[in-house]
Length: 103
Image (cartoon, rainbow, N blue to C red; front, side, top):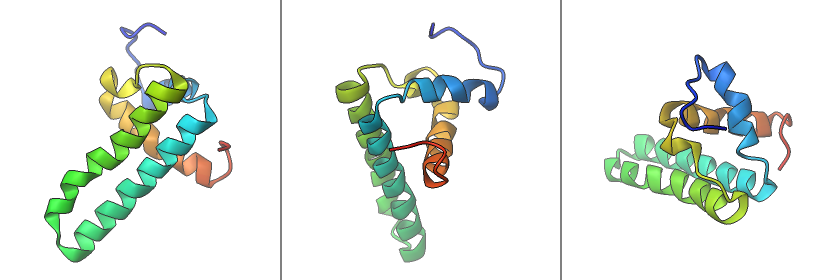
């Protein structure tokens, strides 16, 4: 899909996002990264260790981008659609937990 496409809503964007995550290893790496993001956020808030918040984007994007560059072989949607992509990470995480998307 052309990077200049303007999505009018997240519902319109999400099928595109899922198409960019067809490789199971890429999805697994996203799942690990999102799990780490949630754990780091919870621990940082619970412990009052604000410096841990610096690790959140490294954990999330590190795993996700490795999945795109090495397995999916595409450009992460984050570069073009940062907010929709962030929401997509959590939506895909939810859908994996619910069994709607396989690992």
